[in-house]
Image (cartoon, rainbow, N blue to C red; front, side, top):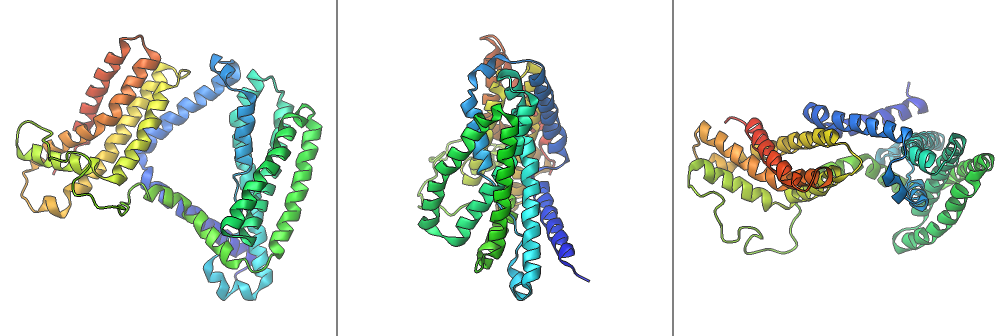
Length: 408
């Protein structure tokens, strides 16, 4: 027999099952083994190091910046009600069931906001403890205030979006931000000197959140808004992943491409392998979707390699992991293009396709990987180190392109 608890548990399980399926599109065992695991290990090492010492770069992090980060986190929450379009055939005729699912959704929201608040405060705790001298009890009181404040703020914004739309919603949302700031900043900075007072402020925020939840459950006429909001929350991760690989329709038609407008040659010799590699390299750099991914990975990689507080060996591990990640991505692009109809119109020898894959992957890898390699030399080595890291980056790119190039 189906119960409210069973229905809610099934919807939560379906949501997380879908998110895991989307995540597997990006993170397979290769990425996890060579990128995510080393990055987590380096992050844990640096986090533990922050608790033991006060690095010099902490002097450049003002307390106002930390409070601004926490404020942005506190006002960026959402509310999950787990209402679906199909519920209009069943739940709308049973208000008790509908309120039961929605109330459990608000409880789920509070739990998730609590877990995220613990992570946010834990990440900033070494700065507050080591550099600003906050005792642990003061940091714990900050968490007890941040958690219910985030839940209450999310409920207020959700009520606004359910009652208003368009410019009426955005106007009220903009006017609400100074109110949130005036409530959050004085409490987080001033009341935190007295942990008990900040904890009581958190208790007051929790009482307000409970009151707002009751108001939200009694609100009528917001079913389609709730179902649309739930659909957006469910597809958020999928949208982030898939929009990187979907070509958008251009607003204007160009007579000639932006790059290689005169069909310039990339390789001196005209061989079957060079011709195939040249065609796929040009298609890659002329693709808006692929260049969008490239332009996001490039600053991320350069910034990671430029962090002054990371040891050289940690940068080396991340550098090597980036090379494997980029090589795997470019290998996938090569396989997609090489199996297309245009390439299939011609007969290719297996050796030519393999040689073309090596050249194409290497040519697509270098524009991203060389700036990352230069960033290591500039940030961690003497002035001549940039030439060493550029040579090492070129060699690693050559190695990755030969290892990742598929046969056939």
